[in-house]
Image (tube, rainbow, N blue to C red; front, top):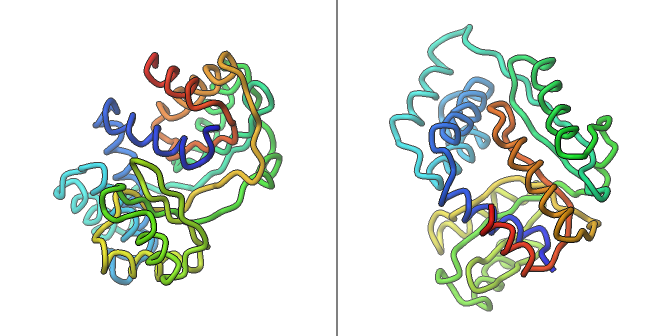
Length: 251
């Protein structure tokens, strides 16, 4: 069955293949801007900015675009004011959905997120209505050819990780948010910068869906991620690998 990390890997590959680069870079730039605005422009002293820069680099965002957003944030006491918002709701089949956004207009974003849920057969709920179905953890992803599964497992556990999931394409290292920096830094010394890293919502329960329901959930994710304010969408659906691969190809 396609669990959390399997879905993340497929989504990541698809994103690299067909994302609208301008929209993607705009979202990455917004996170860099907010991180620098809140914690300063030195990534060594600002963990959130360091993570934002690493994420942008993993998506091949140009260096000048990264620097432009940092300078924009630290060069003015005014500038744009973004708020972090989290929306929770349900897709078809009772699938739990968490939407994270950075917005300069809460009313606009809430209305647009609600409309996306309604359009795709779901419903936007209140904060906390599905949050208990997820755990907040850190994930670090390396390509499978970086190390054998055994070597990566040993290195990750020595660094303080809680779990490692390896397949033919990726090693997914999971740890607590408190241990994230130590685990990441330790693995970077041995294997270099990871392909993907960050804080994620990991489902602690999953909802099994059929092909039609999975198609509706993927449509909801696509609709939400097309919104400029939405930074991330997490779902807890479970479906066979065969159906998932088929839907991703058709999509």
